[in-house]
Amino acid sequence: MDFSKLASKASPLILALLVAVSAAATPTPAAREVATLAGGCFWGMEEILRQIPGVVSTRVGYTGGTTENPAYRQVHGGSTGHAEAVEVIFDPTTITYEDVLGYFFRMHDPTTLNRQGNDIGTSYRSAIFYHSEEQRQTAERVKQRVDKSGKWSDPIVTEIVAAGPFWPAEEYHQKYLQKNPGGYTCHYLRD
Image 1 (tube, rainbow, N blue to C red):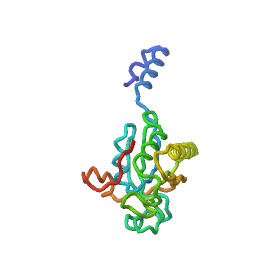
Image 2: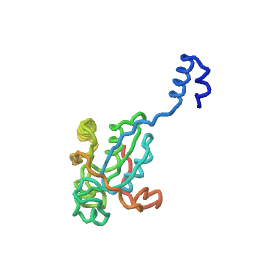
Image 3: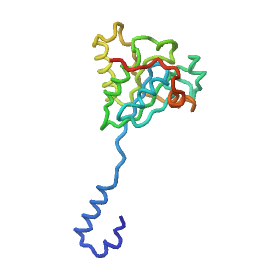
Image 4: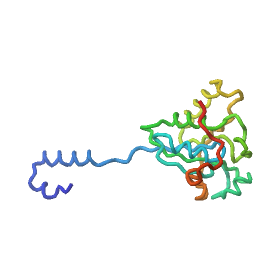
């Protein structure tokens, strides 16, 4: 709204009200948070995570290793220390970080060390890469609760480590199961 013409004729009180109404009508960007999660092949994880209400966007990539800008073959070979991971951008007014972690622990087996289904190696490890002290505390609390729940007969082996650089995977990996319906996945939501 252009107030320049009105400003010369309006009283200071009316002008202040018009400015306040305009400011209230201007949308502000919603708060966003990031969760970075690894739990086996990133294709299946991303497909589940992107469908959760409150998740704004997802992208798959590599994190937790030492090589800058690694390629899939390097990560899969195990020499980089990276895990296949999903970076999740979510709206915390719709879904909490704790709830995102609840889905995470339901979509993979957090008791198998460096493995999900047929995928074996450190790049398929279960890990939560936290972005703040609050996320670390939440992750520890949720992991402990899941471990004590009795849903798993073996102990939870999920690592909880500080987030480092996240390197996006090659484009053909992004939204892979949308591009390739019926493609390989070992992820599903458990009760």
